Amino acid sequence: MHKKSAFLLQSISFLLERPTLFALLKPYLWWLQWKNPFPTLAQFSYRITLENVLTLYGRKKPVVWASLFFPAEFIYALDGAPFYPEITAGLFSALGVGAIPLFHAESHFFSADLCSYHRLSVGASMLRFFPRPDFLCATSGICRETVPFFQTLAELFGVPLYLVDIPHEFSPKTVRYVASQLRSIAQNLKRDRRVTWDFERPFELAQKTQTVLQEIEALRRKKEVMILPPTKNLDYLPYYYQFMGSETSLSFFQKLRDELRQNPKNPLPHRLLWLHLKPFYSNFLSALLTELGLGIAFEEFAATYSGELKPKEPFQGLAEKITVMSHALMDEKARIARILQWVSEYQTEGVIQFNQWGCRQSQGMNALLRKTLRGEGVPVLFLDGDHIDRRHHTEEQWRTRLQAFAEMLGG
Image (cartoon, rainbow, N blue to C red; front, side, top):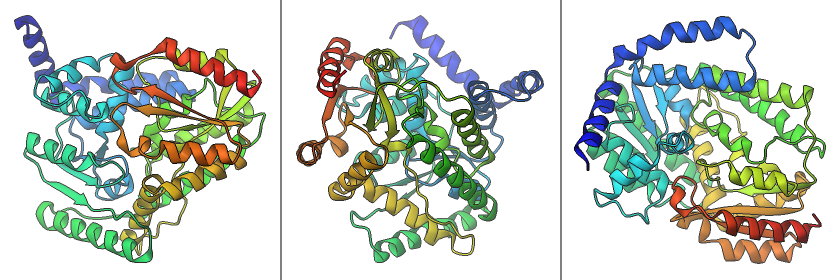
């Protein structure tokens, strides 16, 4: 690496590890609140992002890193600040700064074939771009790479990793097995870190948020309602996962619901179901979908757990949430059954899956998914590329395939 570049990266790392520096954000946040007392959805998201930066890098609370399907309610119950590296990898990519950590990881023997969510997160961790964790929590679902990824992070930072093993099958027995692991982790944290637990508030907020999400889903089932531009809802992923169980998530979805009710936009001609995530580094795909009249009625990753969380039995409820959500993506029969249900409920004309480079979990069942959907008369399109790494960006191929798909739908 060039000496000037190395010095610049070291300087950035040095500044990011100075918590007092982030106190400078406070007057700006106060000014934003004063200027926009009733913010739009975009203004709200901007302010929440900065507040989250202040909390995480300013070390306001214990910083707890978690894998995507580890419930944030568990972290809010111990008054921690959840940080999801896989979600932040998407943010880094969207901000156009993903290439540096990707190259850094690859230059330290992390294969370019490794999932780019994990590769970027490892590189950013090595460069100290991410906030330092106090400890890590992860589940073994839904991706086989998650466990070694978090084990690598634990070794990099020299912090404990609390791992939850998720069985492939879903049953009362497996829920009890997962609950026992969560209970054991809670006991260890109480003993080692003097953590006190309060599940009442995060569970109450999560239940209220679920009610609002169900209202949003009911709105989205109507043909005249559509979130635009296409795939925009995937930018809201932190509110579905990282902020679930907090005021932030509840307020955000209340705003989104009110916006869908009060300011409906003209929907695009075709309604589709979107599987997996999307490229975060470019708006090209979203613009192309709009140009071809291909709207997204619902997204697979917008499906959250709707069961009840009881403070008197916190680990049982959280275990059921983890197991249900993991099973719905890991088990091919459960996943396809849910997809067919959404096709019917959201009145979609077809399905698009964006295959993530190196993601065996989703692509492994593509053939079965294609066969089943076509057998049910549901058109399906698989697009190849990468959500994070723009080196696998293939605009012309996407255009050709989406144009053909739109023509088949009657566009």
